[in-house]
Length: 333
Image (cartoon, rainbow, N blue to C red; front, side, top):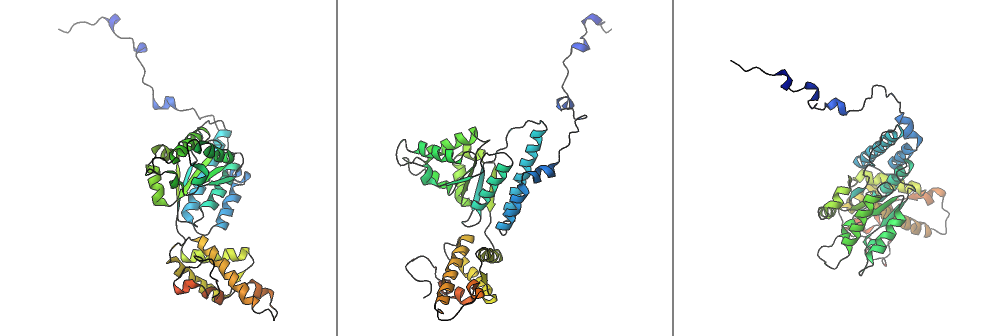
């Protein structure tokens, strides 16, 4: 026969612990209908203008432009959240730009700084470019003041560190690059609301650089890889450079320069848009020399503006050689 249970000894249901429900931790938004016009917030601070300028200034780079737009969208939404009282931690905006020389990394850094400034994430919106020589000293006690001076100049904007992997030289135990990195880490964390640091360089070397310092890797949230330009994109870049300087290609020169690009891309030290700008400068010099030899006859405004095919095909690149390695050699012989 089962034993009887004394009701007075049974647990009081009201005193039992209550398991919290998932809904109990959620804010009640049933009456919060505050409206936010994201389009007005986006257009009102001029971010759209900066992104349009980026599209205009840089040919190609679709994945880079898409990532910059994503970051801009995040910042606009974070700004809107703050305006309606939704407190949040400041997003980590330190970045890594990887890619070959001449792919637009510096230009994108400048546009990114403008976006950050217009949205109120940095006070000034300027870019300070630094290399190892600007940050690392030659003797004990020299690195800290150099690094802090560059950080002071960049405060309120962007510090763009080119070829950042040179800061880390583990093969030299007397190197002071590690000290500069440690100072950068401290300031990146303490001043994340008024300073963005962008590390730039070749992708393979930058990967090793980040692996060498987990603390650095964890503070860089945005990794953007800059692809090389294609031949047609480089030709479009050449035409933009010429138009900005009131020059133009003749039809024959356009075809010649397209061939020049294909040949130059196969030679050493190719630097994308940087190499194209150098080629345009040399073509202008050949055009000037060609017109100069016609000093006895009049030239037209069209002549002064037009780069002809001969100004391109005279390049030693068509012989499989690099130009510019020996500055003493003339470009027209």
